[in-house]
Image 1 (cartoon, rainbow, N blue to C red):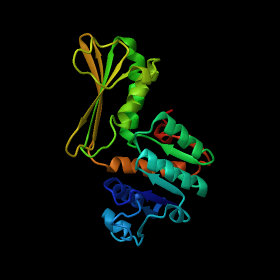
Image 2 (tube, rainbow, N blue to C red):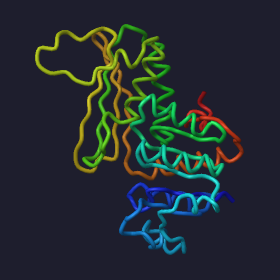
Image 3 (cartoon, rainbow, N blue to C red):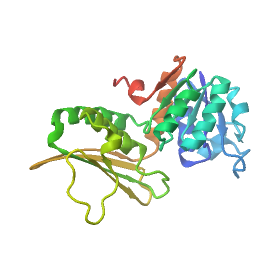
Length: 267
């Protein structure tokens, strides 16, 4: 039985992660962490998550919490995740990370911090989204350079990063399949007299509003035909279930930097 720590445990995603851990065979909640000063500190994590009392109080002491845990699930923000990774590395603990918005430099820093341990980092833990990554790679390879590529993503009005990490990863997958450098061809903004669309660019459009959990569509647009590959999230539970699955998969890994493609055997 793996003991799992969840950080950001009082938030909406944290509650779903706690529920997914408790519902997963082979996992149990060992600790629930929140930021210092959070008004829910000391309250029962299970009650806050809607799972019923688990007799695990919300704490702000990550280092102490990790003494009784095997893996930390972190769905916070890059800067917070990096600080948590330092604590995990010092304690010799593993991580499953669903935080989004990492810069290339931050990803490299994370890899350095956790070089002697094991982690799964994925911008989206959903099984369906990761199946889309696989489909996008195959579609791009088949269609080649004869189709323009545009990506549109929609999320709730509380999301802090844009575009979403999932949308960026979709763009990276397509760019890699087409032999392009995503950082060179991504186009995040069009306004005014911006000229004709270049052949190699990958357009990225962001929509924010209401309570949209997450929607992503990649358009392959040719002359006289269009292919759309879409994924729509109906709840946060699918992300939480994917994170629980990643914990179980990571249990026998001593060290390494993995993603959900590894977890799902899609390499």
